[in-house]
Length: 165
Image (cartoon, rainbow, N blue to C red; front, side, top):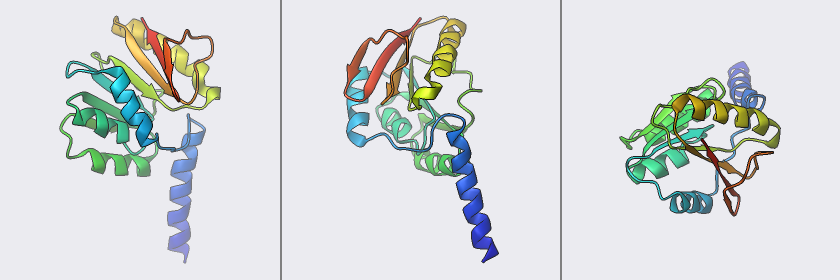
């Protein structure tokens, strides 16, 4: 019985910890994934990054279209599931990492995130810093939550599109 409680504590602890760093695991709806990929019109020269990738659904979807894709996930259990699910996609890469500590790959063109409103100011500062460091524009898509004070390029349902230069 104590083994069951230990496993439960590890599961709850590893998933619950993430809430204090950005958001709990909540999947993006399949319809919104299809809309995102359609609206972005990414080519094989794009590099897609999902900060807080959860189960890797967007990494799999983008890489299946030939786009090099990276997913960063903090929860070890959710990451393990995503990593296994992305194995068959040669252009899909999952990393166990805290999104706040990640340096975007130098050729990043698109960043996606699903963070709660209370983290958006910090996220905006991170994206400004990353765009400056990379020296080229980045399209940022936020799911469900706007970035306060940032000029919206367009909205498509629950998807908010921004440009960082």
